[in-house]
Length: 316
Ligand code: ASP
Image (cartoon, rainbow, N blue to C red; front, top):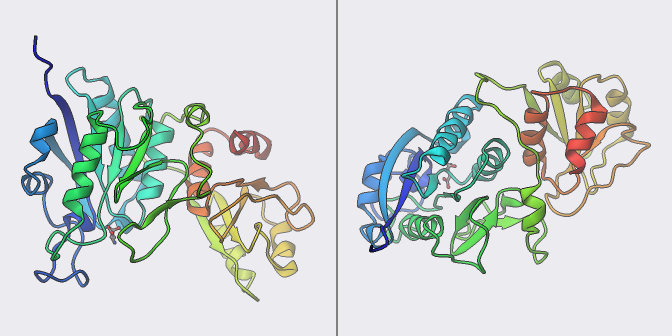
């Protein structure tokens, strides 16, 4: 019997890849305009690699993605993981928060089939849009036509500008480059086995998630922003300078904050080691960038608010 074509489901959420502006222009467009169906029609080569079906989860700028949309997306991907007629899933998404969404999916879906997240830096109406290439690469990866040196299928990946990045380490590293995606530790590669062992959180029964905010430290930053952030949050991430550091004035205010606080680095690269005199007893983000630490903290807080338990999850 001839091999049947792989069945890939594209879940579209919007972003620049579905953006529309003045024909030929790269900027000044509106994200999330083109439907999933029309996106696919614009890349006829997709049918060389897979049978495609599309679903529109939402059609927004990725800065308007919410916890509710994350839960909806994660639940749908879980259903597709269990659907025997489906071989892989591609999510189209704006690049601004693509790294957070990919990480969220990786922490909330038990993957047996590849989930590949992709998007573009130029709108569909640009002169040479990068969306079609990225969508084609993502579908090829989801269908098992490996683009890298054989990454495991049962993980969540971002495919962008010819490269695959694992969901835990990927970050948007450039506001304008066509290859805008990178990783926390360039050159170190991904430890795929370690990625498989990461935490899992079942969000299928939730309608909302705990409130976690990131506070960014700068020279002489008013410590009151820390106080205020704590009042409107269930957990906080501090994007500190260097190895997650901040002023003595911030450290003093932090002493009286009694919600879980994770210390990360605004450098977005390298390993944070907690400065115990500035942030005694607080949780260390390790290699997670602040926005990734916020995703993990949000999910851990669905299970516990005990700092020692949260520290164990962050240490994994
Ligand atoms: N603002 C857009 C978004 O994240 C940027 C992009 O997709 O490249 O939806």
